[in-house]
Length: 346
Image (cartoon, rainbow, N blue to C red; front, side):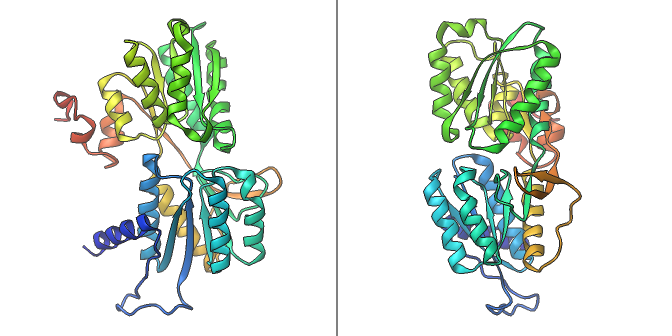
């Protein structure tokens, strides 16, 4: 019951950008000097998965005796820079950031480190900033899984469109690399590639709409995330092509899982964000306490060698929806099969 209450409190306060007070085991409030203070900056909450990351991170950090102040930049690069400066001014112990545009944050991150504040790149690597830790999934494997799924449905010589996120997101290049490797090995041709600025799903929809009659020569569409896939499939449905063109994406959003069991999206990549958020929160507290990061993996940010907590993603199709998504509790069966109740697990 205590954990449930803590989670609900964390969610409510995180939504408003407020900080969270923590209590000692005996119920007494921690002193200001004893508290670990964490500033957490997201790029946006439009994408469904970021809300999960936030809630799990906040509740885990609270249980470990930390206070978390969550900020949302709403896709605004300059706002995210201002939020970094705000946390530096507040002299928090750790800043955890999901960067919108990596290059814009380098100066602030270096300033934070000069002030003795630890900085964690969350899910997206900040290039050239020398953060204290990078916590993410193996994004090249994400692309590889998407490529394997596409190649299992296509034949040599078939064509595919790639609708990726913005080049400013370093993960995009990793995913693209893993995806293209699989296509090359299987003789699948990339007819065109588009990078949706700021991950705006409507841009992906506009791109597909403008592709026009050329879609009749396309066998698959790779989407950078499920949000993009949703808009792409909406356009395909309007053209009576949904389900005929193989669509793959990532994040395992609820609506994506629904589309998969309905047959309009073939595959998504499930990234257990709860595990990611828990490990990030634990690492943030350990860094604040002066403890070394517990990892044997490292990644090159272009200048520095960064400790890297790397989690493995999982490919999800209709065939393994129950064992991956439902049994893990990521989504409820009745929600996933909302429009196909006859397919519910027995």
